[in-house]
Each structure stands twice: as C-alpha cells, then as structure tokens.
Length: 296
Ligand SMILES: Nc1ncnc2c1ncn2[C@@H]1O[C@H](COP(=O)(O)OP(=O)(O)O)[C@@H](O)[C@H]1O
Ligand SMILES: [Mg+2]
Image (cartoon, rainbow, N blue to C red; front, side):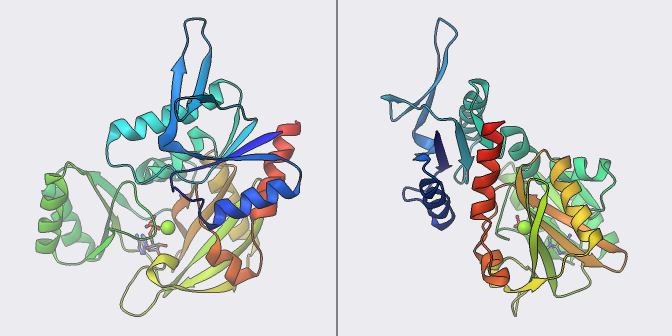
C-alpha cells in the first residue's frame, strides 16, 4: 500500500511529517508530493497519469491533501485541482476529495451549501459593486470583509465606517477581487474549533482572541483551551462536514445570542492548536480513516 501526503511546501510541514510518520509506523510506504511538481497527462489510449518532476509516473493508492499552495491565478488553481482530479479519475482515494475541497475552500460556496442545509451562518453578501458594500456596512453597522479564498485570518477586515468600506472595496475591485461582506456575529471573545474525522467528533477547543485583534485564529495569536462538546455542537459539526462532502475538517463555530453559527469549515485544517488544547493529535485517526476507506 502506498499513500502520498500532498502539499506545496518544499519541506513537509509539521502536520505532514506527523502523517508520514504515522503511515510508516503502520507499514505503509509513503511519498511526499509537491503539488506544483505534478504534471498530468492524457494519453492517446485513454490512460490518465500523473507524473512527478517530468519522469516518474506516480503510483499511489491514496493521497492526503494538506495544501495546494498559495495560488495567485485562476489558471494555476485549475491546474492543481485538475491534477488532483486526475488522481481520483484513475481510482486514487483523495482525502479530502477534490469536491470536498472545492466546497470548503471557496467561502461563499460553503455558506450557500451550509445555509441550504439549514445550518446557521452569518448573513453574507457577495458583490462586485462597491456601493453594495458601503450600503451594507451602513445598514449592518459592523461588518467583516473577507477574501473569498483565505485562511488563518489573513486579509479579513472589521469595518464599521462606510467610507473606509468604500476605500477597501475600491482597492479589492482594482485587483479584480470580488467582495464578500458579512454581518459581524459573535457575542464572545472566542470561537470554537471542532475537529471532525469521518463520523467522529474528536473534540474541540476555544480560541480566545488576543489583545488588539477581533480574530480568533491561532495564527493571529489566539490562546487555546479545551472546550466541551455538547450534543448540539457535535450534531452541527458533523452535519456541516457531511454537507460539504468532507472526510475530515476543522469547523469554526461562533457563539451568538441566537445560538451557534458556522463561519467556515476548513478542508486542510492545521491541528497544532487543537493538539495543544486537547492533548490529542488527530493524526492517528486521519490515517486510520484513510486505511479503512482503502480496505473497503
Ligand atoms: N461574521 C463574523 N462575525 C464575527 N466574527 C467573525 C466573522 N467571521 C469570522 N469571524 C472571526 O474571524 C475568524 C476567522 O474567520 P474565518 O471565516 O474562519 O476565516 P479564516 O479562513 O481566515 O480562518 C473566525 O474564527 C471568527 O472568530
Ligand atoms: Mg477559520
């Protein structure tokens, strides 16, 4: 059995190293693949292959996708997604699947699907019109402007002034970036990160925002602490993960006066914060999940 860990970093990051070590421990042969080095080929006999670095045809049973790089053009994103899809079309199991990844990575698509499934998400508008943004900020009072594709809190802004919103909107549009604006919805100084693998909730952490920011990302200095998982939180997180067709994920949940709300579902979540807060690494569970799916 051969399983690849896929990422873009030249050296495998911490979570990728943990997965590789766990796979080796179970006697699985492993590969670390940089996604930019993968080339796809459609042959005249209808064979689909993925080639690493121009020479070696990649032969794997499964791949754990941990990163696709910080992609700056749509063409590069399409190339990388098509490459992952090529694996799937030739019978390789990908965790998460390309479909799941696409559902989660695009924040608005995720909100569409979650909302349609009856899950509470913040009121959100997606627009290319700066006046829609300014009027939204004027009427909501407190709004969050986010990149459509983003992570670790980078690039998100809390805006209360319609004139600031105007300048932000103009700037984003000048870079051909659509604007995703959300009503600010959180009544605490923390959020909850729930970790799900398959049908199991592994646990949750509170992420307390650090001084001087409103964001609760670990990358933005949040302090973590183990959080209890009640029935409602558990059901909600499992439903969100299932709705987006994900195998494993980190679910970002907010607490509001009206109850839980989901900000996003991460298809390639880091788990150092979760590990520190709960004393438990999801690594063995993810590997076990992949192995079970392969045996089926
Ligand atoms: N609409 C919102 N209202 C209040 N807080 C928010 C809102 N959206 C995001 N946040 C806070 O910012 C954090 C980062 O936002 P998120 O949507 O998860 O993007 P990222 O991919 O950058 O983590 C969330 O965990 C949450 O604490
Ligand atoms: Mg997040």
